[in-house]
Length: 199
Image (tube, rainbow, N blue to C red):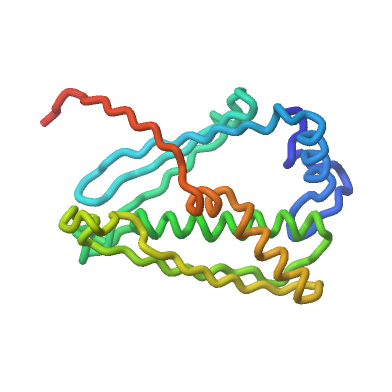
């Protein structure tokens, strides 16, 4: 992909912290080149102890080409609450999923707001997730192990009428990649490699 969203031109118009001209250029590039725009993200999770695991992120591929591989080194710690066997050193996996969903809705919504020229003063997402531990521990085959219900409350304010602001919030919800994935499911291809045991 030749268009770099973050290579901001001098004097580029910024709305809500986003370079509108570059975003519009990216959208036009994708319209003219429908085969472009394929992005692959990578992560590596490594168990530490108990419920704790570290997940690292580095570069990602854009249209088959790795970018920022030696520039990005992010590490997140995951744990569970003490009632679930963890030490509460970090958010649990479901909480991290909620983090991903909330931030993705905000990012997608803000991108649409910026393209529409709407300046936001507030954009918040409150989430609640229900899990039944009977499913997690395979105690009841009728209970799924995943989240049973997820409730989202989006609060938004900006220099537009209520109808436009509601549209922006809904666009964030509908076109957030994480939100869409949770709503419609993801094809997961598991591959198990048994390594040698080390004491």
